[in-house]
Each structure stands twice: as structure tokens, then as C-alpha cells.
Amino acid sequence: MTASLKSIDGTADLPALMNELAAGARAAARILALASPEQKNRALEAMERAIRAATSAILAANAEDVAEVRASGASNAFIDRLTLTPGRIEAMADGIATVRSISDPVGVITESWQRPNGMVIERVRVPLGVVAVIFESRPNVTADAGVLCLKSGNAVILRGGSDSFRSCRAIHECLTTGLREAGLPVAAITLVPTRDRAAVGLLLSGLDGGIDVIVPRGGKSLVARVEAEARVPVFAHLEGVNHVYVDQGADLEMAKKIVLNAKMRRTGVCGAAETLLVDRAASVSHLAPLVAMLIDAGCEVRGDEAVQCADRRVKPASMEDWDAEYLDAIIAARLVDGVDGAIAHIGRHGSHHTDAIVTEDGSAAQKFLNEVDSAIVLHNASTQFADGGEFGFGAEIGIATGKFHARGPVGVEQLTTFKYRIHGSGQTRP
Image (cartoon, rainbow, N blue to C red; front, side, top):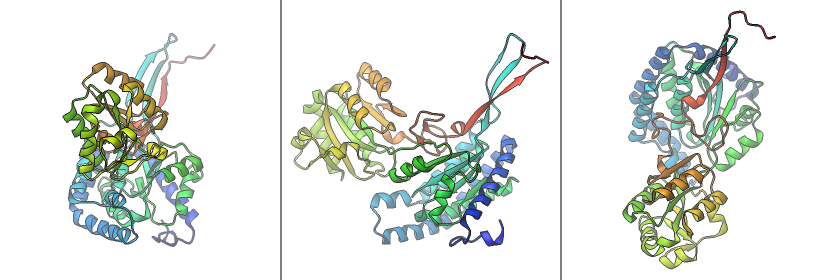
């Protein structure tokens, strides 16, 4: 990059800077598409080592970000999403190790067949090219997106939120260390070096063909803007209005364990449960214990009339509550008429992200799993498993809630597309 375009903030010619970053990423993508699995894995191993070695530096940078955001009056949920701990950094490094262990998808022939004229047709996995990831709050996305794109042969341009700017830079330095050690271009993982919000608009424009796909990771307003303005394909990640339905066939102790974890393990993640649905047929035995457990754990419960009657501490739910992604210690709760009522409620108010049923009734579970139209559906498990790491992907670049190309956790395989290779022996078409 030229010296005139290298400044961190206050860049005089931001469009020129962004176009230069895109050109560098495109050149790097061509190299990555041909890189061997061994070379990419050497980079990943070096990145993992660098992350572990730089734990203190990353924590120091993150502490500055957190202090700045705390002073601005941010919510506790927002601060939790921003905060890194030694355990979270270790999990970041462990995720890199897992990604390294995954089979390289690039060049894999997924299907092959021979036509009557003797031609052999192969469908083979290839990288997408240049991926732009626009994210807020969570600095770990820097590492998750960077290593997943590298493993899948893609270059990536990362634009983190201004709130996590220092943390992202500290993590990014570790990633570029790994690229250098493996002899790969540092432009393979590019961090936009400015907080200027205009950089987002330039990424959404596609930078004159410099970007192949955009992945937004953030709140509803960010995702809505990306979907409205993007001039290139988007892996949509809508809000997580996630439900746990407790059926009349549920074991109460299991239900309590799952509901508490789904809501309160980490309230600020997209896999957190936001609505509790309880089968009307189980209201006498299950409703009051579930509600009391949540309130006693520090969760505000907003319920319909029946839920309010179950515990005087419940606040009345408004119509807006059924569509709310709180990302906080708040949950909406209501009774429904069996599994059909739960499916109908989720169909009206869900976001196609993650929904769970708790029941020992196999037919009810199968009906729920078959008919709830969400990217992830679970039986007798917490919605907090909506995470690429928990799927064995090592990390995720987001949870795609659309239906085209990728759905659910977007990992290494989902960051590839395919092309057809045809082998002939002189065939011509009559």
C-alpha cells in the first residue's frame, strides 16, 4: 500500500484506499485458490501459535475498547459481546486448530459421471473469491472469518465495528504473522484500517467487481442496511428470534436445564432463546417452575395472561415482545396449544434461525423438526448450540438464515462454490 493511503483514520481518499485493498485481496485470492492444503495449514498453525503468544497484548487492546464503550453507556449485553477473556482467546486459538484439522474442500470432486458420448463431467469445489465480512462488537470474528476464508481458499476483507477497533487490530496482527510464515500474501486477510463509516458503503458497492460475496455479522439495522444496499450476493444473517417449546411430553428437570441454558448461558449471542412456549396441556405441572426458575436466575419474564397468573413477578407481554430479539436477560413466554400451536407461533414470529423442542414424545419431536422452517432445529438440546464451533466447524462466519447457497453455520465447506470440469476426447455436438 502506498504511504499516502496507509493512515489508520482520517484517510483523505477513502475510495482509493478501499479499491486498493480490494485489488490486493483479488490478487491474493488467485494465489490462495492454488495454494496447497499443506501451505494453508502451515499458516493456520502459525496463527494459532501467534494468538496464544499474544494473549496479553490482545487483552490489553480489548480492555481499551471495553473502557471506551463502557464510558459511552453501552448495555451489559453489548459489553459482554465485546469483551475478551483468557478463556475466550484460548477458544479462539482452539478453533483455529479445529479448522486446520478439517479436510480441505478446495478441489474436491463431489460428483462425476459419464455421458453416452463418452464425455466425463465432474463437479468440483472451488473458492468463492473475495469475501467481505462486516461485523459489530465481537472481535473474535476477525479470527473466525480470517481462518475459515483462508482454509477455503478465499481472500477476505474484514470491516469490524469501531467499538472493537483495537482488539481486531491485535488479532489481525497474529493472522498476518501466520500468513508471512507460510509464504502467503498478507492481503489474503485484510482488515480495513479506518473507523470511517463510509467504508461500509464502499464495501456494499462491490468496489467495481472487487468483492464476490458479503457477510454481515451484527444487529438488525446492520443486516437490513446490507441487504438493502449490497450490489453483490449476501449471506443473510437475520436476528435470532429463537424459541424453546416445552411439550406436554417433556421431562420437567430436563426442560428446566435446557431453558435456563438457552436463555441465560450468554444472553447476547444470536443463539440465545428469546421466547418460551409451553404446551397448555403441561401448564399445571411445568409452567410455574420454569417461570420461577428464570426469574430467580435474574431473567425478566414478559408473559401472556396465563404466564402472569403463574407468577406475580411476570410482566405483561406486548405484541412487540413476540418478535423481539432482546440479547439480554429478558424472555417472552406464553402458552400454546400443543406442537401445532408452537409451530404456528414460530411461523408467525420466528426469524428462521434456531428453534428447539423439549419432549420425550418422539412423534411430537419429529413433527416439530420436520415442520419448523428454521436453519437449525433441535430436540432436547439448548439453542445455544447454534454455533459453528459446536457443529465441529472450528468456527463460523455467521449463521445464514436464507435458503440459497448456505444455510445455518457458514463454515469452510459453505465458503466454496463449484464448477464443472468436462473431459472429452474430441466430441462435437451434432
